[in-house]
Image (cartoon, rainbow, N blue to C red):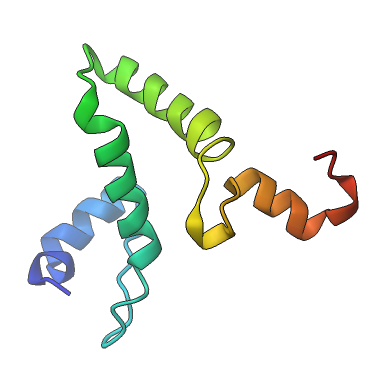
Length: 99
């Protein structure tokens, strides 16, 4: 927990922009591990390889990368080398698989 995240100015800025801040529990470094892993993947597999001309282009491309590639095609070792979409379908709808 860095002091910048607990400062009154920071909390006020979040609140004024309708953003709810969150921090991991004290003494539990594992709370944020999945997000840290996601952002590392995003940076190394995508963001470091491309330059965007505009914010709008970055938003559009990022949404497409997440929706089309990361969630539907990219295999995740933590999910038994399945994509998140396939894993979710196989877990919650096991009889609807065509593969």
